[in-house]
Length: 294
Image 1 (cartoon, rainbow, N blue to C red):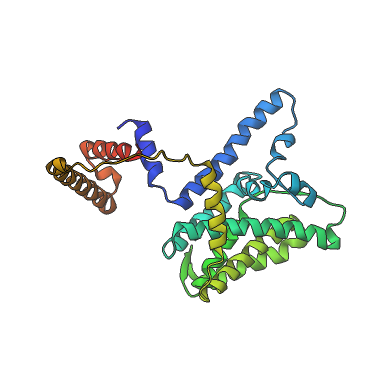
Image 2 (image 1 turned 30 degrees about the horizontal axis):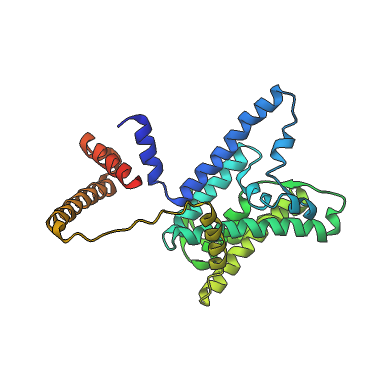
């Protein structure tokens, strides 16, 4: 397999949370090149990023509603990105051991939305924020939603922190308290947004324990949006040909053997890793993936 084929295969093996992390990294790197181009043409970079950052002004939101989501894909610096993605990776591994990826996305992006609304509401309500209209970026609200979700759902689950174990309930509480006490010392809107995301994660679990998944309406809304961009499949008329029964049986047996071979290779990957495959097995798996993409 070529390097490109191996890279494509490895990307296909990533789960949804890992792909989300990769997208965040890409959204951090890409603006760096864009800023260079803007600098060379003497164009202020704020004009570009301003279309994706979340403003504290409700009026701006009416003209740029997408910023309620896009702000979460931007980060102010390497360490801002690193710690957000590290915590997201940590929390997502715990989350996906118990829930499906759709539930993860529901919690994460609802946390992003609620965090954004909380940020904007705080600048409209609190006197301390009068005469200021900052912009907000960062995935922290979504990350906090996932972390506090797990801290609420499995409060007694212990995780390793360098030299000792700590229960998730105390880890989640520590993050919330840190945000509360840091509000007067800078990035007040950001810390309030984190608390909004945390509140969403907590409330999500409370409703889930009572039998209501509050993420379902959001999931249906997203699915309806995605359907707009999906191509309608053309209808085909299918005729039954009884004279080809033997050929169909042969094809079915061939498909069964094909799937069995794939399952054997996947079991080998699970047991010993991708590098344990022979060259022939890697090529077979890649061809199988290409045939399914058609």
